[in-house]
Image 1 (cartoon, rainbow, N blue to C red):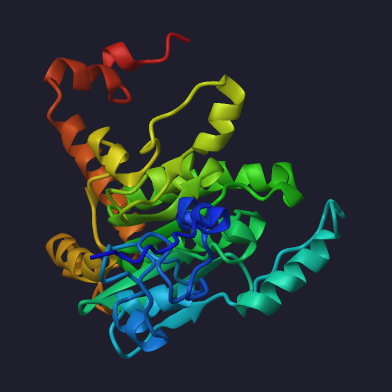
Image 2: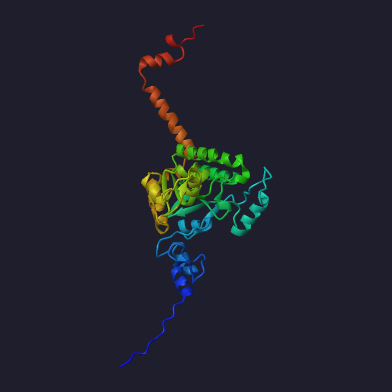
Length: 337
């Protein structure tokens, strides 16, 4: 019994295609609904319901400042503060295009007047002031208007006795404004320091990325600091450091999980749990006596008055011999002339 032979054809081109299978193009083109981490694909409605977090792998997509307001606040919405402020061009800066054109392009593409949005809102029924950055507006860079709006938000929170919520997402200071942008680092630090003296809590959320002068100033000064999973949090990014030092950094350098191990953040919180976590903290830190029309002046003024009363009490508790020396008209306190 004979067996009929069959010719075997081997195609070198076919083997080459199999060898480079990983490099083949996606069947589904990458877009805002395709996860860059696991290639899962979702509709726009699914992404919105899931707060733009991939249900399969937990990858956090970037969100705009106004989306973030809606995610954190109650369904009643929020009241935006100082939307009319716009950046100027005092240096008449031009790189590949004039700074004024970059501002116009950013405003047209994002619908925002600046890289930060400030508003009054309620987080789990607790009134608060929010200052939320938007990376899509010129990389969330901090210029004079960003610093001014954050300083106003601090003052507004102190006057109302309401906590301040800051969401940072920035590449750092805005180079087109030069030293004026760097000055905002000191300005925002001073504003948060005044808020601390007013005993008004500050909750900071670090989104991807938080780098440069923003991380080196107000973003690192929260009373409670949360970070979103996988967020890059560093003064300089790993690529810049590697190119400068010629050393290979760990794959998780500057990431939120590593910063948690180093004690730079209090917790890494999934965006879907963020509003509940912040609301719980605000309920714990809430001070009703500083809110509403019955409050006696601003919290900062109350704190100053309280400090003066404590100082007077300390003076009264000094020994009698010391008090005699500092009282006017006492033998030891008389003018030698």
